Image (tube, rainbow, N blue to C red; front, top):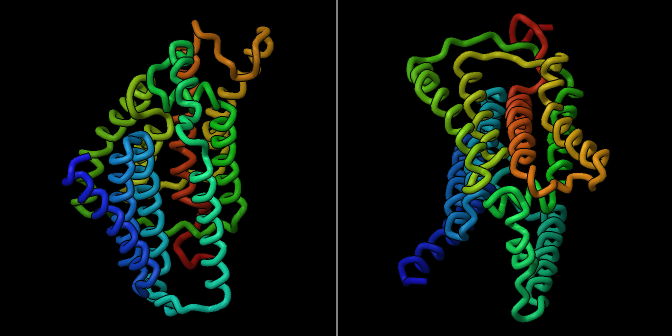
Length: 311
């Protein structure tokens, strides 16, 4: 590592810690949200420095982009009176002290776990790379997510579906009156939305041999949907078609696993000859479902009404 690279890593670490401290202590929630978005972008750069471009893509799209837009929309709904947190700056009390001690203990346990690993232990990377020719893809991250540990990925999609169900169980808000989009936002939709759809398709296709995949492509596609919603508000609801599309990725994933068992194989253990095709089918279905799930989480549970204060 060169001196410049080391200096960049140290600067990134210092900036990340500083941003966390500032966004937790600012009383102006709008400024805190902007710092949160900046923190996510810098964290994406840190993942790039750690040679984890797939994680960096997900962090930039979901951790900073979609989540940042969600928090900004929440602030807009709160209005001017809700944009200031009178409880900040945070003062030390028993609850916060207990939480800090719990986090410190967890950090100490994780540090002890890493330091107690045998010297020279390389994990399972050697075994994973040896199995790559049979995985159906050449990207180790995609091979891990969709082949070596596909059960975990299936459950992750299920968790996202449960999150949407949780949103739908909340009391529905009145449908706010539509506000016309400004010329800048309308221009952004016209230019960026088609580009984001193309980028999402590319990330899906490239996931087999390069950074990308279903989650990254879905995040970009959902971001395009959020941009369209901000310019021309629409509301999904929990209609049958929406529910079918949200469950489509999980259903395809599960159906392929069941078919493998019926065919004499093991659940989600893809045969080498068809692994690449099956992974692409699963990722394509998951991309559509995850994108709609993220969009549904942003839009929330809305009922028809004349305005925000409708009965």
